[in-house]
Length: 381
Image (tube, rainbow, N blue to C red):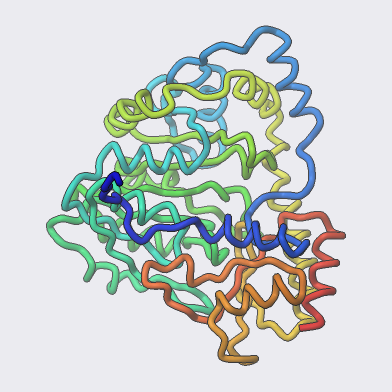
């Protein structure tokens, strides 16, 4: 028998895999894992096919195809007024999660402390621990999940290395405000604290509100790795393509890790995306597309016994059920999938300590008929 010491003791299969498997086993409607059940634009598929037919099938440059990096730099300048040098400050990655792990690997070592806001995307804390870092969670509470920055300041120590942000946030759908950005500037000014800003849902902002990217603020931009995802942008989560923006000094370290991690990513898809994204309307209309789905889903859910929590961005809607029973959220999610045929994610899975506020997360990046059928089943709960 080989003895092996786990580097991530206590870490099991993710809740996303568990709930998707349950959905499959019980032929349930899967509103748990965050992916669309509709196809991407056929023009995008054709653009990738054209790239394949034209011979773009070998390694891309380690940093990504120049044409795509240039397009990203132009897009960022147009949206946020921030200049990122396409050669030195933009890197194409194998999805957002790889970019997050690479950014952490480039700067987090044993004893470094990383502040995260929970409920948080489940890759943050394990990645920090794997690198020998210490996770300092700040727990947000429903219904609004607002940040008390004076309380965040109390988590600071001489070992604080990084703050991880996610706006719009998975799972809550909350977004950072201009005041949040101002508080973040106040707390980090004069420090060497870095920021990892997970902005994969940047174009999914609703009700006319603005996405407060770290790129908007020079004081934050200089210390930030910004992560984005083509999967969320183009309805192609299975392609696993994303990118990272960072000042040259930070990007230099990022690329040292990236080159020994994946080296480079899918060439024809990079070429196809570059051709497709020449039309800015592709992302300009995304918030309207998803707001229509959000509004429809919320209106239908309002007819159920669940309580709706705010959703300012992302494609996730959270609901609470504590007024209905005292079940733990994992029990509740299991009952819904087994007995009512709808899969969700229990939000306690997004807390390091498993904090349970009796809240479930549904994904509404689905066809209208899928959402209608799911709510029809939830009406019977």
